[in-house]
Image (cartoon, rainbow, N blue to C red; front, side, top):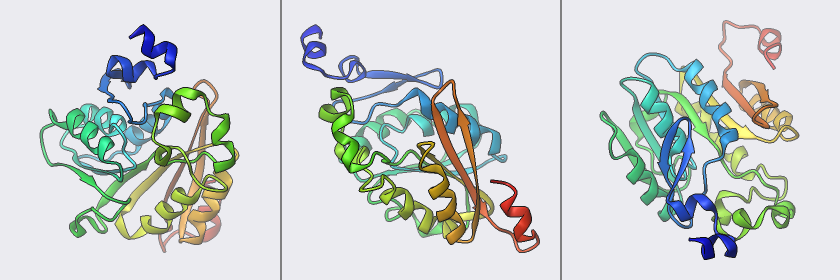
Length: 233
C-alpha cells in the first residue's frame, strides 16, 4: 500500500473507500474519487427535497452523492447513470443496500433513463466533468493519472457536458423540480445563462469553507413574471 501511494495512486483507491457526507463510500481503482466540496451540492439537494422524491444523478461515478442523499431521506425513488463501466460497477456496490426503487444504469447522461421519468424528476443532480481541456495538465497526478479522463475533462471551456445536461433537463423535471450542478465559481454565470436559454431560472450558491460552487435551476412557471425569476440569481 505504501508503494502504491509513493507511485501516486489516490489514497481512497488504495484503501477502497472514501468518506463522504458522513458515510464510508466504496471506491474502486479507476473510478473518480468523491470530493468533499460536493457536500455543498448534497446540502442544497437535501434542503430542496420534497417528501418521497424522485431523484436522478447523472455522471454518478461511485454514486456517493446519491447514497448520502438516499441514506438521509425516506422513500426515495432513485436512478443514477454513468457512461463508464467501472463507475457503474462501483455505484451498484454502493447502492446495493438501499431499499425501495433504485436503478443503476450505464449510458450517456439521460439516454438510459426510463421514459416513465419524463416530467417526474424532483431533483436532477450532476457533478459532471468541468475541467477545461487545457487545464487538465495542471491537475494533481492522483487525478490526472488515476481517475478516468471522462470524469474530469469538460472540453474547451469545461462546460461541454454541463451544457448538454442543461439542454435536456426541462423535459425530465417535475413542475417544481430542480437541477443542481457543481461547477467552478468562474463558470457559474455561464451555466445560469445556459439555463435561461432553455427557459429555466438559475441561481448560484457558493461555500468558501468547501471551496465549492453549485448552480441551481428550475422551470420558469408562467404565473411568475420574468423579472421575478431574474431576481433569483
